[in-house]
Length: 260
Image 1 (cartoon, rainbow, N blue to C red):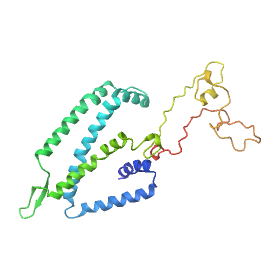
Image 2 (image 1 turned 180 degrees about the horizontal axis):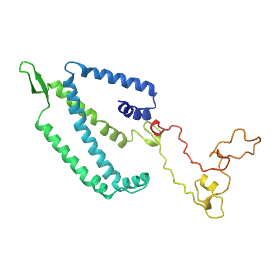
Image 3 (image 1 turned 30 degrees about the horizontal axis):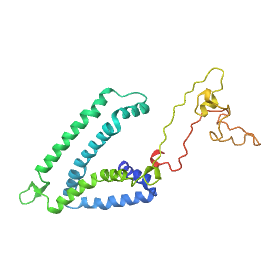
Image 4 (image 1 turned 180 degrees about the vertical axis):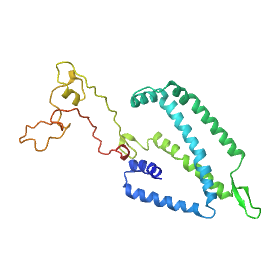
């Protein structure tokens, strides 16, 4: 349950910048209130309704859209380059054909068969007939059908809503509005230097030795050692007393909690 709650809280906190404590309490109270529906004598019927119509078909639709978006919209070649940069090696070519051709084809076939089955067989549930002491499939009443359709629509609704907001520029990343998260790709600093050159400063600045303007490191790399002397001519040093290799961090005051 902790993983489920964090999966709900993290995008909301990153988007709306709200207090995590209040949002956690609100989500837990809401989930507890909805859960009271499932502990009634008829709660098993509601559990079956939510399980059959809020997760199965909507989840399949979301997976198909994710696969198509990554393999065809974003591009499987770009995705492979990203994987190579993150993993350090190129995945097997087998995954290329699976993600681009085989997996979306099988998912679309499965989605079509699910729609056909849903159209041919109206929503039913297994009811316990006490007089006959057996279970029997019973059609949902009208309000039950409305609830089943509402569950499917609400599970899929974020996809077209966010697409419309992005397409019509209602949410603009460049304006610093909601759901704006800044990412900066880092660079690998090679610890190689030409013979006879001081490579410490060049590594600190993230440049090759030939591009280094000065052997002195920048003021923002390390803090000064406390109690290391007096006067204003102290050099910024690493914790070991020598110029060390540091990481150049981007100035991102509003870093999302998920990136910490």
